Length: 379
Image (tube, rainbow, N blue to C red; front, side, top):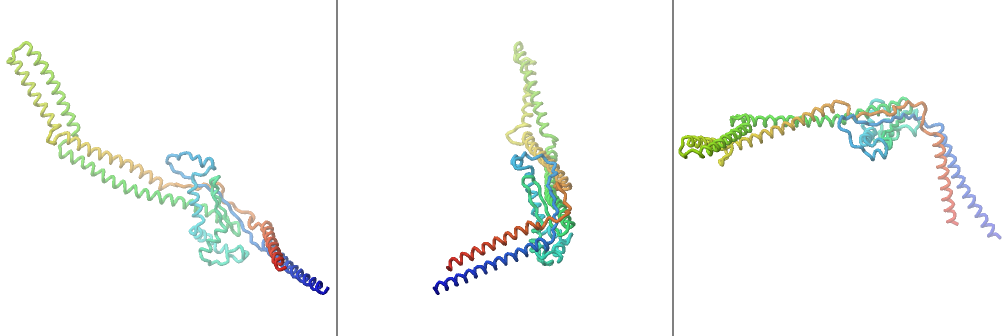
């Protein structure tokens, strides 16, 4: 009987210990819930959000790109995805943060002691890495792949600062895109200017080579001279043919030694000699003929014309590059201008309070479950 009483008293003590532990966990959970609700409902500072929607468009005058069926199936704005992702990276960079801080004094704004200790930046003189980490928690830039737009959202502890941050991000983004495009275009212009100068020098050398060759040979156009000689040879051949025809006719009724036949033969012999002389001017086994002059002249002339065509193309490319370098190449089109917040969107007080209380209760339930498991193992 005494053993039974002792066992029951021991069980009672264990139950009292378990109940006290459960009561302690419940008490901690209640206190944590009260603190969480007090913070979100009473202490948390209001944060205002300014939002802007932008898209980057190219104002290039070049030929249109081929139709992109993938972008048509996936949404409308796939054409400038690379530009917009580059812009997003720049707007979230430390360089952009420094510009914003210099113009809006963001360090002071985000670290004011009047804001709650969890929302504000604790140290106004924090390292740039810490400041950038905090900046990324207050500024979000998302790329909508379907619509093809950038959605910029900036948080501030007052409506004016939130609006100023978003507006500055939009203006600095457009400036950055154009500076990048202008820098690339200027590099291209510098390259084209060097190429034009080099090609111009080559053109002058090629043209001078043509003039020098004409002076050396004493011919304005060897080709025209060769054509004239060929014409003379053709005319002499026609005349020779006429004389041969006439000779055949005269020989039909005159004796071979007749003066008329002798005269025709002499004339034919002279024409043949002249044809041979003219032909030697064009072609010869020695190689120093007009044909060689024509070939060399045509080579020099074609080289000069080829370089001239390249020079024309380079000039057109240079002028196009200069135009591209001086105008707005990338334009940031504002689909929705930066909004002026009228009420605080963050924090979502009721939502955050509910979520945190549920998490605390869940953790308390897990703790009670662990205690029950430990108690069962001890028993």
